[in-house]
Amino acid sequence: MQVKFSKYTIFQMFAFLCILNVIFSSIVTSNQNLNLKSGDMVEYAILDTSETTNLFYGAWPPGDYYGNWTVSQNEKVVYEISNDTTYELEGILVLGNYTFNNIRNIDVASALALSIYPWNGGFFANASDWTSITETIENTNTSILLIEDYEQTINDNNYTFDIYEFNTEDYYGQYSLFRYDVESGILLNAFTSFGYYYLNISLSSTNIDIQGKVTNAITYYFLPAVVSFIFIVYFLQKKLRKV
Image (cartoon, rainbow, N blue to C red; front, top):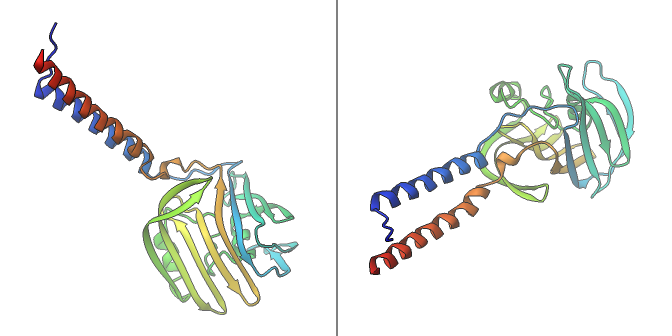
């Protein structure tokens, strides 16, 4: 029995594969809203630090004092959400060898200077309202830059993000550079300093689902299959013509 592939059939099959490729590619590069919950964790590698002894005061109100802390280069900063039922996120904060409980995200922002007063960004900025954040810090000697296709390695995988970069220059002695993912609001890396204190951290690991950020991973694996299909159909059709 002789099998024939019409040009129309081949075109249909090829178009179907291309559509699948676009769909999968969209899934890979699409941005998902961040829905934080208890147990979600972010871990930052400490790239550099002043190794000063620091007082841990939470954000006001109530501005509670939690104790002293210090960290060294190559140690970790870890924050795990333990309570997502209150208006402000609360969690367990590990700073090197120090552990603090019931710490709000805004407390972290205040104590570690991951903030541009009066905005307390911390590890999780409100990605649904960047306009309000911009207005809040408009008089803080801070420039804001949108950077597309910013690359960073997290969980040993390469990711690409669109980010907002906040660069603060001498705001009452504060110098800071924060980079936040535009879509999720997660802090990707930060350098901040005030007086003798400085801290440079970078997100190295998280159990939060950011798989939607892997750059074209499926596309790169799928395109060879499309190319192979074209060659198979071409040689099969060529062979059938000889029969």
